[in-house]
Length: 622
Image (cartoon, rainbow, N blue to C red; front, side):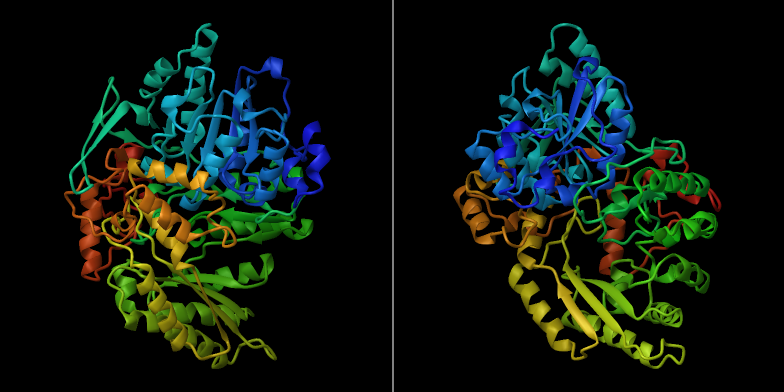
């Protein structure tokens, strides 16, 4: 449904298809049949938000409930924002065209910290107060979810509710509670939030007092009005039985990942010490291959997509991968559907997998050594050797591939310039491996693309206490990397250190940062994840205006006994385990992955005391 008041200027903005809705498989309901309206907001542009699997799952789930209507909302690009303000058009749901102010819930998924400034733009365009304390009974309930809410404190004063972990089950419980309150005839916002705090997995920031020491660290975090001292994340126990959408909304303009996507498992067995996802999504839970196959086929049938991506954090760790690919090849080859298998492990790329991949796709292969030297790979617990990297590339070259992407990180804890040089040296060894291979594709050269992102210390990882290298240090290391690469067969990419710095500030920040975010909105900060709009000098001025030192959050080493802003949240991983892993990192000692040996991370308590990751071997508690 296209709002009549945007038709007059729609063709004057970039990509008007972002704002019109009406796509195949989108859900339109009769408002008189609906009790709960949920605006699912992705604080970035349509093309990125429509690629997000979590939105697809929850959109389908919510709309499967007869009296719930979920609509999609994306951040308008600055040209559209300007037109909306000029013509007094409020931000609206794509399905109905109704303003967000009319919804019961406005939910934001937080996928990356640099999207935070867009949340304030979207609330302002909706005439919804920024702060929870300023909202009345008539305002929507603002809910935050997604991976970044493992530390929601920079946005705590904005959120009415923070949903920790996986949302399929806890959302239904939240809706049930809200329905009872709404149908009672007198909705009391504060009473609803007090009762919502009793639902496991829901964190109500307004029910907690935070006090600070003179040095700026947290001295206490105190619940009030019966709120729990710690809030434990929610997880889905049985991935094969949980809801999965039979179709996706099919976009009418090109999006970033325009294909069908099927989850094969959640979690990760590996324990790379820099990887937040590998810890906050524990424990590992697989979906059986028959379910994956059926869901993939359904999505291709209902959307018309000719590509399906098998989604996970480490696809080659899926125990039923050979059976899955065999089943899927029975119909994908005839249907001309290609299979994408991202997130392959270096040590999981076998000759057998190579033969199957030849049938399902062609193009580049991506692997992630993460560090250039063995000492640093051991420190980050990558558990991959240089010989395994070269063997994997040899297998790929034997299979006909000529393009390889290697992912590395710069600024990892304990890193030296020798480690930085190792990135270039390992990249060169991959090039040399191609040319010494007698089975390499004839008449073709090789291209190795090595990308080096900047390390950001994240909550609930063994490196949550580590400082991030300052920007000047990162720049020196990036220059050192450039100088160490001389082959034209190697393409170097690196991530901007300025944006990584701001990411670190908000990743480990506390409630004092809300005033900086509000001022950032007032100063025009938008789309900070986009190079053309990110302006670090503006942010530094804002920190100075608010008397906040951003280095306190990004570049400061923290002690084990410091109260961290996220210590009251329970993601299943114990602090004792993270401390053990941090100490092993400093000693460059590795920990075997979960299927080899239980490290006692604590996630087993989320599955009844027995870690489901070990179901294919001996069950151990940990």
